[in-house]
Length: 278
Image (cartoon, rainbow, N blue to C red; front, top):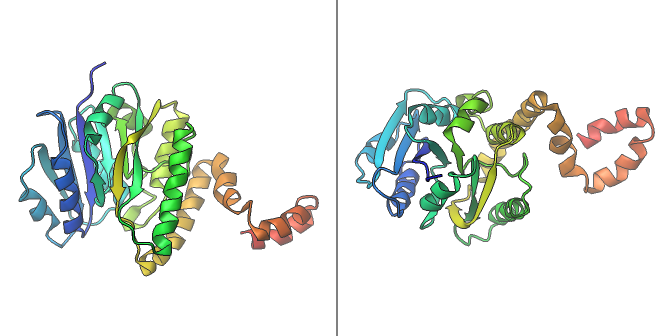
């Protein structure tokens, strides 16, 4: 099967400099004329992003879709996919540096697979605890994908390709997760639905995409309750994920070790322990 054409869908909001840098990296990719198009979805920005993108010269067809009001990243991705013309889609965040040869390798992989993950690595050597925590998580994602074990904790659409037909049959991203610009779990939800539907998966270990880690503590704190709400929504939609979402992360904790053994044999103790484990 020949490699499909590829539409790169990039949602962005109020980050003109970042998305321009991402587009510069895409301009250097070794793909033929007409094999790749880029769709930048500007999600209600007021910082001149749309004008900055339109002013760029690109070897690829480059289109800008402007949303008047912020709809959230899931809605922006869906809008970009709706206007994309290619047989396959690459959803790419606006803070990614795509390594040489990545688009070519991705197109080749999508000739046989439905869902293709690029290897994400942290850009820079900041050394801060936040960066190191993010790097450790990406190392775990890499290990799981190398072992052929993609799951709800490893699926991220920051740099992931999917066949258009598979994306459409799954119904795209659930826009409720990030409505109005909230954060969390739209990736996990779609990934879970695609895996459950039998998507053929490929992991491109040699196609690195460098991500610029978010290190603003206040922004991360603001996201925390949104992530909690999104996990609740995810568990309500997919009850089979509740254990891994709410118990798995704490199974090795000191609190779980102290309370868990006492709670398991007695329903009354379990009810008393539930607020602590929560």
